[in-house]
Image (cartoon, rainbow, N blue to C red; front, side, top):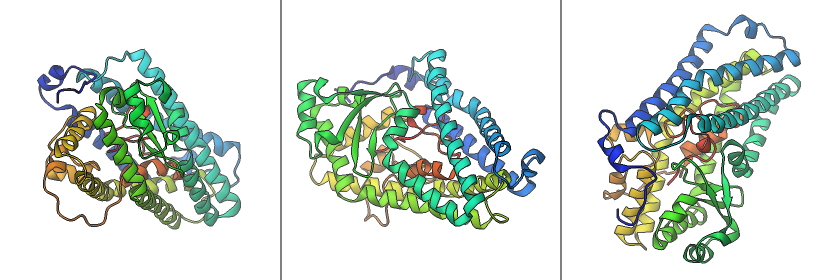
Length: 397
């Protein structure tokens, strides 16, 4: 991989004894998601504590305080996993030189913003359910989801410590590549992030391409052109629209199903908690099923890009992105099937059969949109636990 720089010492990574970075993150994600799924099931089977179960149906300050307490308990529950995923593992595997103090400042910012977001969503759903009923709750979730898509980039900025870089300030060669891309330069943004796992993405109803500054600085011009061409294909080829639609419909189906499983209206904190628990179980099911559709879309886009690009350019791009994520070019097929919405380098290099139904980035888009239902799994998965810069813009291909 000559010509590429990495932000860490490769010798440290490859000589680390025992468990690999990728497998350590995977087990951490399994722990975080599994813990929340078990707790959700326990609440639904055994019931809630008395101070929540006995809450009144009249929405007021008592309910507001109870919601705040439950969200604070959730943040405390996730703290050890965040510390491991955002600070300990990256430091131990030579992927970060961040000090504990600076990490906690970034983490604290992300936690505060997520707390406020979930607090607003939860109180809004409870107030709507108390006054207008469950049908209005569904409409509220639809509205929150639509707003989330429209303002995803703004939410990402609130959660993460990003810095925008003006295209005019980039080197001439890089600026020329961006200005001659098929996407209008006004629809392309460059963001700097302290997390080298940040991949940028595509946001908004009128799609905007976000590129990581590290990619812009590191990639040769031909590789940067490939990134921009791929994202243009994802937008104009309809891949993003399909993935977005599948993710949105999955979240909406979970909302409706969760409401049907309640004891009546969503008009108490206890019913709100049950709604969130049922929804968490549904999102967990999505985490098991949607990665397959996401991988198929990535492979289908690869095949289309291979038709107009050299094999070596494509393979270099795959390796570069993989090394910035988990550096796991090969995976057991079962692990990839269940846990990874982006195929490994080996899978992307192998001959591909005709792709069936696919939905690009649908698994991780579902996680972001689950905030509209008060979802708690969005920052618990292996790719982003403890990493606030990735709690809204999840890693993508």
